[in-house]
Amino acid sequence: MPVHLPEGLMVSVSGFRGRVGNPLTPELLASLAAGFGGFLRSEGSGSVVYLGRDSRTSGAMFADAARAGLVSVGCRVVELGVVPTPTLLLAARGAGAAGALGVTASHNPAEWNALKFGGGDGLFLDADRMARFQAYLAREELPRASWDRLGSTSLDSTAVDRHVQAILELPFVDVEALRRRAFHVALDCVHGAGGRMVPQLLAELGCRVSGMGLEADGRFPRDPEPTAKNLAGLGELVRTSGAEVGFAVDPDVDRLSLVNGAGEAVGEDLTLALCAEVVLGREWARGPVVTNLSTSQVVEDVARAAGVPCLRAPVGEVNVARKMQSERAVVGGEGNGGIILPRLHFTRDAPLGIALILQHLMESGRSLAEAVDRWPRYAIVKEKAPFPRERIADGYAALLTQLAPAADTSSGAVEVDHTDGVRLAWPERRQWLHVRPSGTEPVVRFIAEAPTAEAAAELVARGRDIMTAAGS
Image: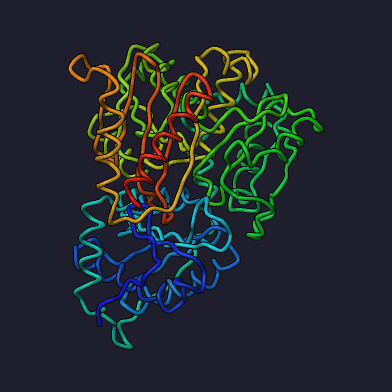
């Protein structure tokens, strides 16, 4: 029978995710994986699927279920074990696989898990292909294989090594010079999959590492999202160890946040800005930058200084990646600390970001604090709140009615973007507000940026109050 998606399962281009036990069960994961394998075969993509996971305590159980589901429909499963998500996607693309399946809830707390669905191109399913997959699940019987046509399982134990080597071979990274420079870095992998790769990369780059949370056991000691408010422990490690810079990654290692030599978190939006500065500093690498609608305008400042456009896409890694492909962008990513470099692959990649940040600091001879101080300072305020999805259109309409007329729209003083929720921008005031439903949680997100934290907080409060009134 077709696969039923239960209530409480978050479904988006970021995958299918939920809380362990309700709605996520091994039975559901096995059915979804079987459906994915059948879908890939129905589209003529092939039968080889790469399978990896992050370190969550539920990960082994769900990976076993996913493998069983794939084998049951005749897929050949290549298991990577606990690896970063970018490692999984890079391996699948390099092998010419039909697809990739990641068991990971990325930055969500430990009680969450998910399936992320990738194609053989090393990208997650975009909106069109995800819609086809969901339609397949809703209408098709799972194509179970007979006893003599079941799939098989093999292991790939060198995917991390290949990923590290691919970063070391990038023309943007001077490995020998970095080894001579020998940075002292602090590292927080929050007990996620990063402990299986990032120390290896840093060793190859000649770094001395003071680490915490390097055991990939899934016992997250804090909220695993690497936002500034969650990095007090890394800041303390930087100060006590004397490290020059601190790096924090999320459990599946696609996000990177930075802490300066004084132990202060600099904000995850700066990760993309500084990495873009390294790439755009090469004359042969000049080209557009792409980011999402919720990323700081400091990325626009970096692009403007290099004389290249900065283009916006809806939130979601694959949305940014697809726009990067269509616009032939040279670098891009999201303000949550996700860096995408086409010379490597079209996937957010925290280890790549670490190499680029170290390259930036070495080339410039600046500390991280000095590198950040070269660019305008903005404050971003992010909040989230439950909101009835059936009333969200009313909320958007109220936002436009009450906020857009505050400026003369005929003069272009306020810019409105409807491609992902509603984004209102006031370029002359250097302010914007983005309101959108989350793809990973049952909430509406409010993100605002302004030159001061007070102005950004006021903009979020106004947006939240307007939406709340419209939804009540």
